[in-house]
Image 1 (tube, rainbow, N blue to C red):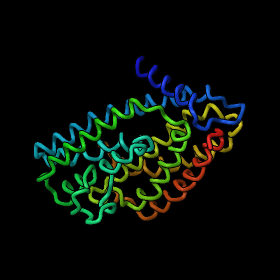
Image 2: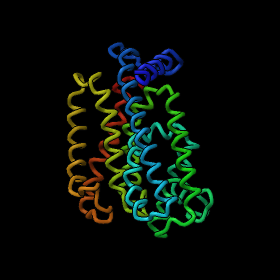
Image 3: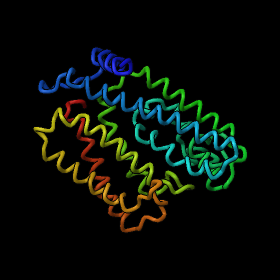
Image 4: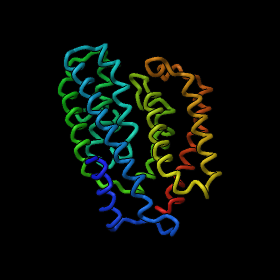
Length: 275
């Protein structure tokens, strides 16, 4: 209950501030309180799971249990990828938690390359946990810091709604190409997490405008269903097959609905008068 009240209080503070609010009389600031508060609760719950899973993951690394660490890598990232639009509000943390080798001058050899993907490189490319202990500890500390910061954050409604498109744009930019998890080939886990995170945002705000935008949501739902249908082909009892097992035909088939979803969901803020 405290979490719910805190989330609602945060939204009330935000709505009373200088942020741009809906101009459409049909959608009042009060209409946004519940979906934004519900989203903050959703994010907080995902962060609790992320903290738990990151501890299991980093403990395995520090214990030198290569097999366990490899197994835990992909499922640990799911919670982060689901709520990435909020995590990215803290750019300093996002750059240490989720940067890729490309972001650093010396790539994999750069001392600034840390976080999930540096651990991925060690585990899957080097096939070793050697030297990863301090990087694992830093990741754990950053994840705990992220949860603490988010707890005190008043969620901007336009950022929450815009997050749906941002998640799909990331899928189109890095997931379909396979560059995100290039060492482990666990991209489909991230892919599904981004899709699920975008769906959550759409479903929370859908009741506010669905009556007047039935065609829009029908198209969005159809494209979500297409993506889910393709992803389902690669699911396993433990998660997903490696991304390099996805056929070229299915990769091409994913590009269309993902790009269309990104474009359509970029209009969601406008439909809610949050531009």
